[in-house]
Amino acid sequence: MVSSLDVQRLFLQSAISRRVLSADLAIVIWKQCVEAVKGLLCLIPPPVDDTLQINTNRADGWGEFLAGLNKSLDPLDLELSRIRNEVTGKDMYALVNRRDDEIARIASDYSPLEISYFRALVEQIMLAPNSSYSISSLAALREVNALTSPMSKTQAESVLASFVAKGWLLKSKKGRFSLSPRALLELQPYLKSTYPDEILDCTICFEILTRGHACPRAKCRVRMHNPCYETYRRSNSKCPACGEDWGRVGNGNGTVVPVGEAAAPKDEWPRRTRRSATESENEQQQNEDVDVLSTAPSFVELFAQQLTIFFFSSASRSGIDVGGEEEPPRKERRAKARRC
Image (cartoon, rainbow, N blue to C red):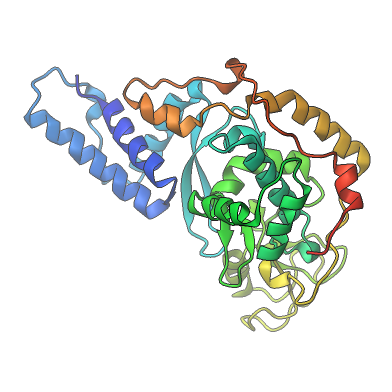
């Protein structure tokens, strides 16, 4: 029987193949899926589910579809989540796993060693000096020296390229690596629990911020994405929290300071102080408990294989032992701190 679930299946297949969708593209694909399923009515006789009466011209049609889709995905601990692109200000969607916030669970299509490397990169990005939330290519390659098993520079370059190709990292024209919208979506719970002192939220849209502008006053916590800042500055010249004068309305960036790659120092600076030893030891113990799940198949692979019957095998129930390497204690790595 043809039903609205067929629209969901077609849409999910497209979402999985693209990993991250702009809001405009997502709506176009949704409409095409509706038309494709309706076209089946000419080939398949009744009965037809009444829920197929979908009006794609209604302003709230997309919202209703998204709510229904996420309701269907909820038992699978999956969600089509939205995040605002920090550069363009446009909404983006990605299918994410909401079961756990451990990096190993999300990057499970990589080997344990590659997962450890990815975790190390995330740490250095989050702890980058000057709230630059980015690291140079050289700094990224140096992280292999802290791994418990050898990884050549050539291998590291290949893995880095894979992280970029699969949408986990962004690489700028200057060769600096930062977290992608997909990574910010999927890793947000992990980032907030692991790096609470480094997490910034936009004062305007309240979403996580890794690039934008900050009030120059030292104790002021106002931060804004570039698009949010541009909108705010069209009619305001002062900080909304402390009242600091940012210069004439519409006068470019005024006196605010950058957040993100633009804040990265031009010369070599020591990396930001790491978290306390207690926090590091607690995380190490947590990692020992959850790393046994790090080699479970990715949810995208499983979901693609069983898309037509909505089957998803939970990694937490598999009990697979990765037998892989763990990160060295962060206390030892702290003693080997290098410059970014």
